[in-house]
Image (tube, rainbow, N blue to C red; front, side, top):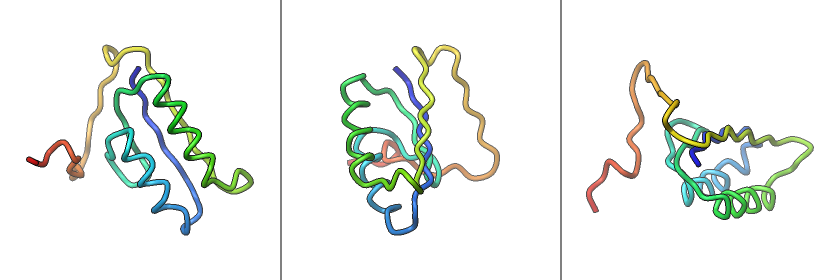
Length: 88
C-alpha cells in the first residue's frame, strides 16, 4: 500500500519521530513522509511511534491508498531532497 504520514509532536520528540519514520518511509517535508509499505511494516512503524508519543499532546495522521495509481503529487517551491536522490 502507499501511505502519507504526517505528525505533530512536542519539540523534544521531533528528532525521535523523524528517525523512526525515516526507517520506513521517504521524508518529503518537515513532519511529512510518504512511500510504499507493507501492513506488517506499517504496524511496526505505528508501534514505534506510539512508544515515544504523548497521546494527550501529540498526533499522527496516516493516509492509506491501496494503490499509487490515483495518487499525484504536485510541489510548489523547492522540493526537499530524499535519501533516494543520493548515490551510495
